Figure 1 (spheres, rainbow, N blue to C red):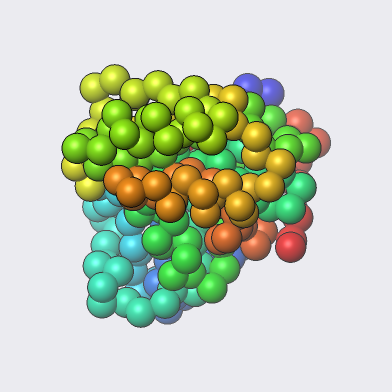
Figure 2: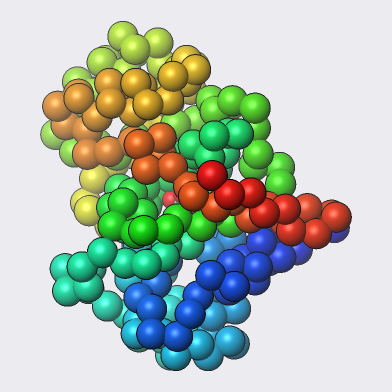
Length: 219
Ligand code: 5RP
């Protein structure tokens, strides 16, 4: 089975968490795109959707789905999103698509975070995938130097401006054996908006698409 088929399988399995009348948070990325297609086809009468990026907002609208402003919804019952890596404690690396800051905001506003991924994203430990860090452009060089002091090798993601008008540094070589601490350490650097470690707000449910079917794990 190819990776897209596994992503689609995980995405479609997330529909079981969507009930009529809910507000649903929607992540960003290719796995989430399959979820948006499944939502369009399922026609569940939810109150509306909160998008974690402009790309997701446009895709939801293209399916005729109602997009809401997070400022008007209060906390939301469920958030569905993909990941670049997931460890056995449901801690994640996210931000391969550059939407990590809004994703973390919507995930944090959600009572339940359902993470959808193909099974290759499940890792014993985080850290192989370069960690995305969203940085205010003015602070780019300063932040890069502080990331080197933390043990990392940052690379500017060329040609990318986030929905918030910022740049992304992709960082390899960091020791992520304590993801909670590293999430805090990086976010304490002035000029960092957020980083792609989701340890303080980890997933509650993992749905992995695998050749043997969907593997569901709950925290
Ligand atoms: C975007 C993300 C995505 O969820 C992550 O990159 C996974 O993407 P995909 O579903 O395309 O594999 O964090 O910022």
